[in-house]
Length: 262
Image (cartoon, rainbow, N blue to C red; front, side, top):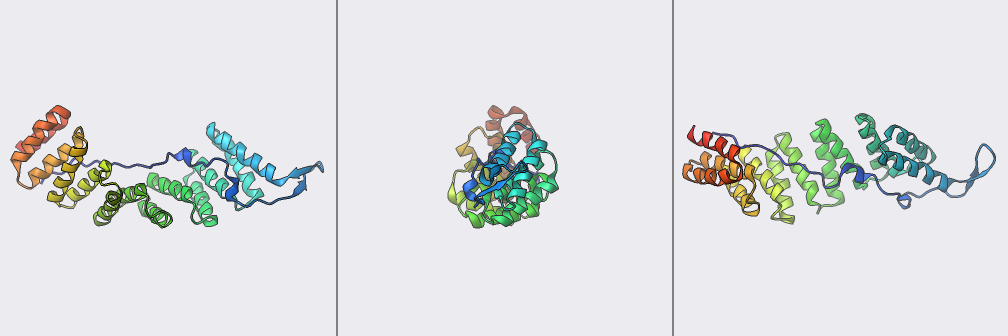
């Protein structure tokens, strides 16, 4: 039985650096009042904390992550439960390749604010890049508790389940996305892949048919559709797909023809 042209589509709906929040000190109750610095000058604690955090954000945006780390750490020393500083410190660590330190920073942010979605997304992104998909899945499940109607969370959950071979769980996750957006073409494509990998060629073919209806230029979907027709013994339909694929992606069409004639 020929295998489909497996190619999962993965997405994060927020780019990593957008997750560095704009200054949002309102999320954290800050100490008020004044203290004295070493020169016995009055210093407003709130202003000083804001200055440290702002500088960390600016340095991160400039790509000076090592320096940004120092400012975020100072802000955290001044206010240990400053959730945004913990999160942004984690982002800086990721950019420096210090993944384990980043994991701990994101976890501290979550411990302080259990419904802090940005930290969960960053943690899931990091776990994905580290190949730690079971922990990635746990992060998505926490996000679903925070927002049970976010299609992108279910989508990435489906991809993560697929990577560890839990196809039944992946199918459930993708169906959650399609309940929100029935024409989400990436989700339909990945669902077709999972059906194929599970030996459900009839369901896979029906799903890839929907993909090419929505996106007639989807060469990979046509290829997979042809393979699934062939797996069901329908060589005539597979050849029709080949002729269509010739116009879209000739190299992929020739690959399909080789399988059909093989």
